[in-house]
Image (tube, rainbow, N blue to C red; front, side):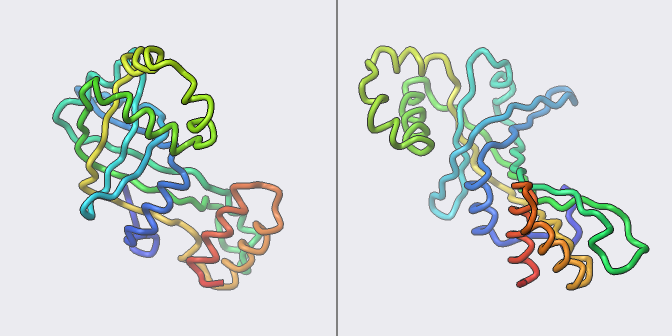
Amino acid sequence: MYIPKHFAETDQEKLIEFMREFNFATLVTAENDLPFATHLPFMIEIRDDKVFLLAHLAKANPHWQQFSDKEVLVIFQEPHAYISPLHYEKTENVPTWNYIAVHAYGLLKTFPQVENLKLLEKQVEAFDKKYFETNWQKISNDYKINLAKGVIAFEIEVTDLQGKKKLNQNKTGKDAQNVIEAFEKSDNDNEKIIAKYMKEVHQY
């Protein structure tokens, strides 16, 4: 990912926090120079200071056939907002887009089928604890096992984590303040989220 220095985010804790908040990400691989992508919810785990991404996809999805012995990319990106030059003090400015993105590169390993159900239950508990503690416990084990047979469960050991926060760091403090104040009053959820992140970056 192209990351100018003033947009770089290198704090791993902040990157992990972002990935957990916006965990519906895009898994990308390439085969014979042809990219293939699948959109999935990911769990993020830290083990011995290493970052792991856990997910599963349907066995009917041919993407899993590209998983063996190769590096993959997972893209986490959610909040973004158009920035009008009308927010800036000087007339000589152009439109832009503020956004945050994290690229996680790593090595993917599929789980043996007997471990699929374990990951599925871990995800259900993480994403919907109330359902996990009620209805899920009433479902027969045979049903759950058949469910697990229809998926490919995997984890990715992250080898490179790249973060980019493009939040008007290249503008004056007043220009950034104008954008923040406008977005905080906005009815657009993305703009409100961008304002929150801008306040952190600009210490406003």
